[in-house]
Length: 451
Image (tube, rainbow, N blue to C red; front, side, top):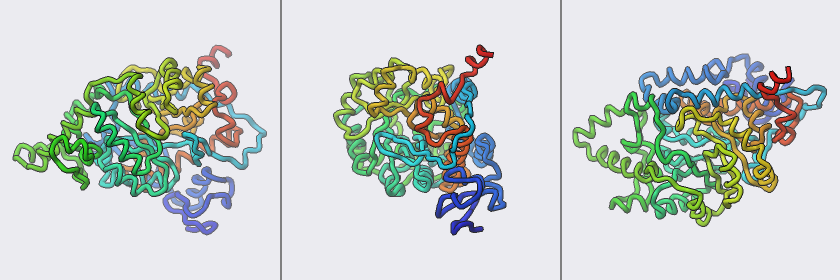
């Protein structure tokens, strides 16, 4: 059906904003467009947990693929801490504020973006959908959300850049042990238009992940998730080979079939296994870096340099003095250390630091990651001080179900809930709430003490 000259399909309105529809302006118009279409949303639900359950069912013939995305360290303690900790921070709405016209604009790395969302880097997306990585980038571009390329992608950085068009894109680095390979990757990222470098610090070793161990699922062993390395001229030259630029990770990921072909002597699979193992030695080498190593990246990357995985006040303060441009407060979604501090609580502690707050006023960027599922989650993170938030598993579930359209649907739904919740809480912009947790939120423990 059409309304105001734009098409409503699966609850997604295209061609204009929703200002001509009743009760909805800007991103909040997503919901009213669903009502106006008289059709339920894509998948029949907007509940992120229900969407995840549908994604699990979609991959029921390939449970190792689903659990590679959904699995966590140990007994899932950190994962549930991330999810549950948001509920301790209660939003306190204010009334009689004219929030008719709102904006979700925010500044990320000194650049104004239309929303506070960033696509988080998630690897091996070819396990989830035939167009994994590419459709995630396409969906992000359709909504105008910056895309973060994962070093563990099943497509090359150049391929993802091509489908991203003019959309903002960042490059996430799993830090190789060899400096010449690192420099090659950075050069390729810069040439392909990636504007910021996000360095993941908490994966020098893979976490203890029972779901993956249960099925011995590690796709890198078969060369999956190694496209950055296998397409890199410096890495491949070390093995007297030419870069591999064609897509060799064919959906679905069938470990048993690949093992069978390897045992039968399939030369292509044998090459992939060899190179996959060699690439793992580079990026999951067990070699830990320290603050002195950051200087090397700073000297060889022109543009924003961000450290991902910061969870302590001390590390955040050191980061502000290390020459980097920002941090991602993150515990890798609970995938690395079980029993760790919830990421939203880490953010709250870090943003109590006057050193960090002063640096932020001067342009130091604070991103938040781990546990975001709903609009109120985003509002809580922004109120506690984040410039923007990274969305991970939710968009992967959309990718599993419907590729580009699925990613786009998840992002639009989340933005609609952010916009609606912001207005109903009595605010017109994210700038009005950023870092103002004492006004916007009340902690459950403080509330109980007051009562």
